[in-house]
Length: 277
Length: 286
Image 1 (cartoon, rainbow over the protein chains, first blue to last red):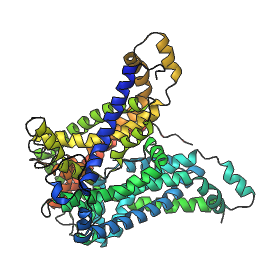
Image 2: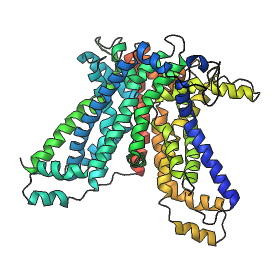
Image 3: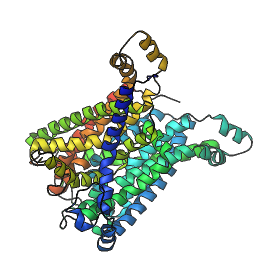
Image 4: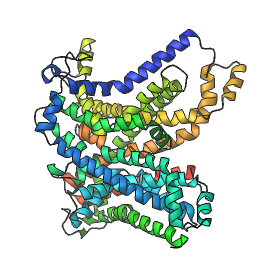
């Protein structure tokens, strides 16, 4: 706001920025540092910087627990959920923006409504239906339940995206002899790529971090995903904080990497209110 | 293939998926609430409104309603105040601003489980960093989860930390749309920074403030994972909201009809907030 900043004002600004940084990042720093301490040092030393860095907690986590298996389950669930979400949300969003369809507002409104559902409220009926279909405690069932989070998000976001894309582009392609499907695949999809990436990122985030559906849907240890697997490490035996913090760091890492590489999509999506939580 | 076939093909496939995954479960949830069921595969028995009567006669239900309101209100107020404050700071120009903006978003990216486990580790009674810091300052130890008030405060604290970035980002985007000429004109008139905040910034932020508060209210009121992981609704139900109560009914007490009845009541309460949302922000056609 101000142009000619006085010294005290500038100092106040720096202190405020420092406070925000420490408040936001310290717990994350502490998680990473704790995962890298030697397990013996972990329980005796609270220095801000560890004396020795050690990967022992990671080694224990990967060799002695089911973590690798849960990691694979999480990858499978999130990747499939993202792909399915992208295919169906593009179809719905494109259809409702490009055609005069009766009840279009109802469709979009229902999507926004569904996007606001708290997961637990829908978990009871879904679990009951899946139990009857024999899908309880399967990754397929978990993926289907994640679609109740990601699909409304995708449709809602892409609806806004397609709305702002001029019709003339496809019309020109269709005048030149393209079919509607051809124009969609060759003209619309490439132009919609930034929107698709944003949907992919946030669908991944929702699926990868989900605890509620995984808790309800998955019973056996073999089918657990990371959030539930990690949570069950607490209290299952003596508290191994080193391993737990190593496991936490490994869950968070893909998200931070994605954020570092694609922060403009994150900001854009957040600005559009793209994530519930 | 004609143009119309493609569009309607898309629409049909999309709607079929939505119907199966979202509409059907929602309708089914409501219908389950009228049946008595002791297991997820057993035969349901029609009981009419008996589940609703039973649920609403239990004092836990009303306690959960109040707890949900306290939790939602407490966490929203702090999220919004901190979020506006952070956005005002991050809107100023200073070296390293982009880095601080990036850092301020990080809590929002973390899975709930990670946040809760890290918090529990930091306040661990033996060796947690916060415990040690409190000790070093010569203060009495804090019992984060033992008393009802402390447990509620802990859940609010963790939730505020997790969701402040959402508010910060929304306000930061909105602040950038406030015309600078307004501030300049006000400055010429000799106003103070505080006056400019209350008379220019805040009124300009009002629309986004409404969206944020409504969305946060919808999501915080039925929050499950944070509370479940942190306190399991305890001690003695002090942090139990409707979502936790519903889960306990369906999955711990095997009273599936009762769980569905609580979920349906939550749906109804939630729908009021959603209708307000649609009323304030009607869907714009194209």
